[in-house]
Image 1: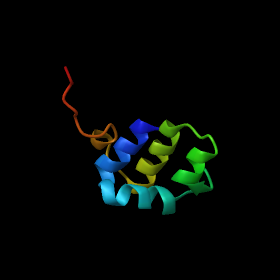
Image 2: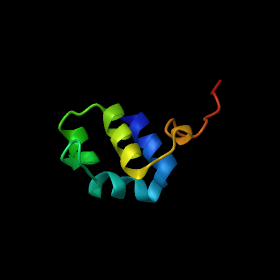
Image 3: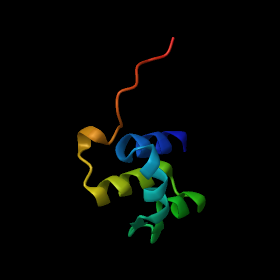
Length: 70
């Protein structure tokens, strides 16, 4: 779940990520991203559906690079 939220914020920004998750209807789930996750859908599958619907290119589907922590 945390990874899903990070990817959503990377792509849509912290202010819009929740709005997109709560309002974007994903046809494959017949639900919003938030509803699909609450119903137990795999976050990876939900993220892929969001990417497909928004035509997010492959190079951005893994989110931004995060430097390792020590």
